[in-house]
View 1 (spheres, helix red, strand yellow):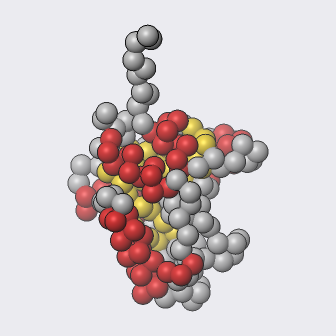
View 2: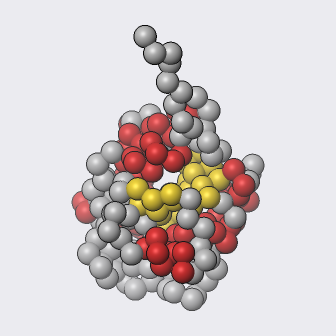
View 3: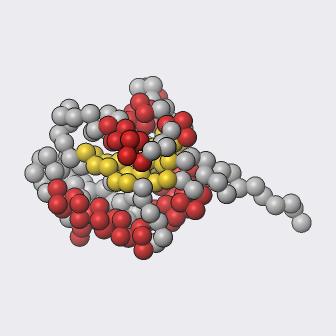
Length: 193
């Protein structure tokens, strides 16, 4: 089965791992918790041939709540866990800056553009962004790729995205569901017996 999208950009907190409480951050390796099914979803995407790229805002560094070294250690753990599961990320791109201090912080497209320069061959038309916030959807929309939202069925985010004119190609409750329902080509059923 070939991938529906050549490159899949993934937000980190709330898509791959449990998000910290509002205003807090995952600040140390010990606080990292994979969301159920996330690793398996990445395995499926990789088997289908998608290149996997993490793009994440990590303002906790600029706010002094964690160090750049702690962020690197968290990302090393993420990479180690995935390699142990047979998954290789093409890259992890993080914005450690305050809001409005740079062009890399989502909803800006700087992280996407950096990945496109460094990884070569990324075409927005054959890429998708999976996130859990309006800033993720806006960044993907601005970059020109498909966008998918990880959100509960009662989430107000799809309506807010529509009101802001953001592209939204699908919504599901978890990365695993986004992958199964939207990112992999439809599986063709065999003939009935």
